[in-house]
Amino acid sequence: MSPPLEWYLLFSAALFSIGLVGVLVRRHVLIIFMSVELMLNACNVALVAFGRHLNTLTGQNFVVFVVTVAAAEAAVGLGLILALSRHKDTVDVGEMDILKH
Amino acid sequence: MTALSVLFVLFAAMGLFGAVMVLVARNPVHSVLFMLSAFVSVAGMFVLMQAEFVAVLQVLVYSGAILVLFLFVIMLLARSERPIPALSQPLQAPVAITVGLMLAVEIGLVVLTGAVDRGVSGPDTPQAIAAVGGNVEALGRQLYTTWLLPFEVASVLLLVAAIGAIYLAKEEL
Image (cartoon, rainbow over the protein chains, first blue to last red):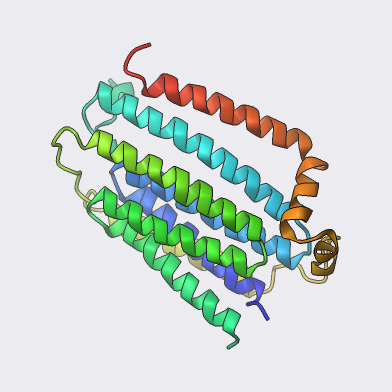
């Protein structure tokens, strides 16, 4: 017998919270980006867990699309980071403030 | 505890440890490797939930493609010898951890106090999935019938993202 829904949801909540802390606490732009991916993954776990609990495959279909969008987002986001680091030689989000001036 | 529960605890421990170490590691390359452990354990959880296709997708796309992309970018950025920024500003860490703990406790309370709906059942029972031929077959049928339009839109999105990434990353066009 597979573990109950609650276990998966609690794991998902923990993973999401860790991702949130990562976005808030780190200043390295790539680590922040990785934390966003962690949060996306936590949502995927919750989607699949609910889908299994409610006997529907819609959750898994949704995960397929979430993974697609995550791949697109990673490609464009990393391209942006590269362009930004060429423009201003830093990976610290605290120094990426050209819109302020 | 059944064998599946033991596996769940193992995957959960590995995943959460990897996720925490992503934040704690000083070297971004180490962060990516800990991220790999988190992603693989999430894939293991998908297998525990009989979502085999999604598990394979997780390993292929996340561990295979996205993390390699991260590694490439880290190595491209590392060419100039810049110091990696400090972990945080003075008050940033306590505030962030408080916010994260609050969120975790809130979701945990919602889950544990039984707000999750019970007694609702969709058409895709394990028997129905087995009758079609398995998880991949059942998922493929839905993807190419019910979700055909979103599927095609997703492929256009990937094309746009590929063009956009090339445009952004190229030195000059």
